[in-house]
Length: 414
Image (cartoon, rainbow, N blue to C red; front, side):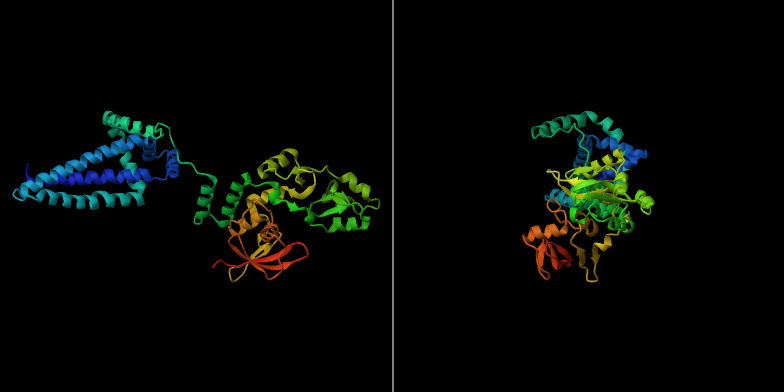
């Protein structure tokens, strides 16, 4: 065989080796979720690739069988060329092996694999058209190899016949959404993150605390009650006697405002307009309560603990805020970013809401408000001017009253 033909065969083997090496990397580097999307769109190359990847053991067996054959054949051809050119040199075989190793490493291994890792679809889809019929032709050989491979893997507890698709847990999906800044506005990112957190959030996490519930005390004078009805910014008010624990019902202000100017309007008129109060266990998941509000056709309820004591109040708007966040409320009033990068934060804000606004990771398992988190951390009510490192976040206490922290400043991390 003339040298020109030998060099031609060697070049062909190097090209085939590059193809097998690159296609292996490209097929294993494909984004499986994008691949499934293309399969739904009936992309021909994606469909064939998806079918091949259902049994990666067979695909890898085929690629490595072909690649090893090509590499060994290339080594044999290089040896024949070296002997023909330098028959009298004793070390020519070693020299030829060294040269071929470098050439194959650069041209048939690193370069195609790097390209395949960067642009996997460029080579994976065309390769699928070649591997599909090739697998049928070489299936007896590939099947014989896989028989021993699968046996060895089964010894270590791996069953390759099961289809193990890539699955994402909630934290991984949240990371993908957080990194998708170029694909969607930040407000939509927060909305999606809020939906993912619905499974772990309870009504206790988002309720209005007991001390902030605005209501009507029937023990007050009728003049004070009427003034509260006319000036209240809320659409529904809790009506009770002396204490919120003795609640009678909820008053819808739209009904009350129609009758409030009547001369015979009195406390009994208010009682007649009340709707039955709804009580919600504090451990109820947010998504469950949303369904209950929908089925019972109510929009407000009182959150109670295991002893039946009222702990707070939750509305349908509060539940929706967990999803749409700033689209229906102005979060900037509770946490305002300053020119130096610090945050001035109302300590009554819930920890979940603060995490959503700032993308921080303050713990939400314990106290539900920032005030509670600071007091639990300090084991006392800190004085203004005190600075602490709150779970990795530097905080300065700005304002407090007798029994709560009112305003804090989160300093930029160094």
